[in-house]
Image (cartoon, rainbow, N blue to C red):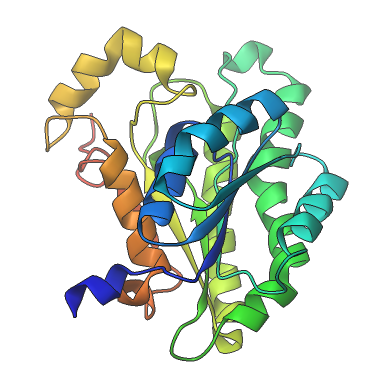
Length: 260
């Protein structure tokens, strides 16, 4: 049956940064497909609010954690696997952006962004590897989905040096991990979102959202279902033979960009 290609019933998932924006879209999609989902965020208030809003879609738990710190990644991993030694789906979505001109771009902008965008996904894979190995089989691998960005595929107009660099590194880390973990029955893929409504993109979309949409081949911005759909595909049986890929979900903005 076609619906079984996207059925996640019985699966356990963790979505970092799952209390808002793209993470919330993905968490909702996984829940609607039948998965049990843990979401994380730095603040307890954001966790409580998101857990309440997502609870109508399924079994969801929210755990506050500052994933820019290595010990917090380990703590989250321990809590996620406390009730079950198996984790079927890990979505590394938590991220940060820092825009500032080249002349004044500070050291802090590198440390803050790379710790969360690049180091945290690696630390979580390390900490959760036993649980992912336990969940995966040759026919139904465990899944790691890293949330990259089209800023790592084309050059954005805004000065986001550490963000673009961190996402490009995450795309390559995805490929490296896919090669290593494939024989262990774990797929590793990345999604590279374009412009979606989120706190990170709020100022940009308010200023030039209409212009961005008008230049996109599909003439619109991303919607919740666009992001939920690609996540469910990669997490479900439909995506079981896909690994080492970077999938742009951007309405064609980066993938059809022309030079100037």
